[in-house]
Structures are given as C-alpha cells and as structure tokens.
Length: 161
Image 1 (tube, rainbow, N blue to C red):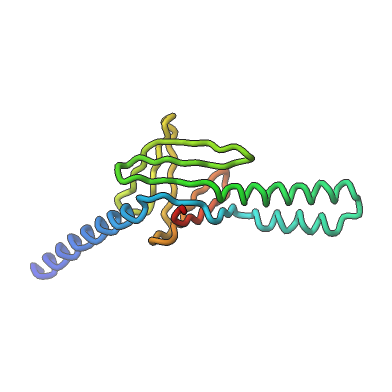
Image 2 (cartoon, rainbow, N blue to C red):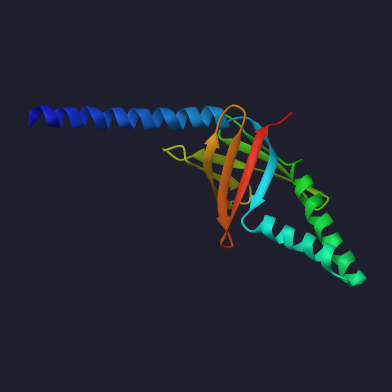
C-alpha cells in the first residue's frame, strides 16, 4: 500500500511538472509576431458555394451581379484579413494590427496563457477581455479558435515577415 501511494504521488508530481513545462514551452513559442494566413468560420464555405451557385444559375441579370459582387466582397475581406498581425511579447503585452474593410485598427493590451497552455486570455487597452484556444502551436504555425454567435472561428497564423 505504501509503495502504491508513493508511486501515485511521484506520478502526480511528474504530471504537474510536465504540464507546467508544456505551458512554458507554449508561451515561448507564442511570444512572437504572427500573421493570419487563413481564417475559417463554420458554415462560411457552404455559404460561399451557395452564392457562387446562385450567381452561376440565376437568369436574372441584376441578381447575378449582386451575387457576384457579394462573392468578390467576401473574398476581398478574407484576403485583407491576411494583412492582420498579432505580436505577443515576452513581457506579457501584445500589439495587434487588424485590417478589415479597408481600415486598419491597432490594438494594444496584455496577454496571459492558461496554466495548461491551452488558452490565451487577452485584455485590450479598453479592458475588453477575450479568450482564444491554442489548438496547435509550433515554430511555423499557430492555430487558434473560438466561438462567437454560436459559430466556431479558426485562425491559422504563421510567423510574420
């Protein structure tokens, strides 16, 4: 009994150490400037396919133009998002530059990583907090997701040039 108790205790300590090292490693990998390479929202691909199909099949020339313009607008929005950057600094601050609809918005604030290294909590300079999941992180790629309005958004970021 004593041996199994000490084995469990040793295992528990090893788990805590392993998890805390994992969070530190995640923090080290996260602390750099990232650029959005891809942005996905649940259902968006399906909506885009429906708009393209409607543009291709409608006989009403006015509606065709509207569908084509909507597709181009969303594609342009997605391309512009790729100009956005997020710079996590080692001192726990961040700077974000978001490009949306022809406008660039700069935001500053602080960031912390959860103990398990699976979530980043950012608080902007207006004290608005947001939590992002760390789905995957390596030296070359950071995949983050969150749910807003019942839809999951996924950001794929790469080190900024």
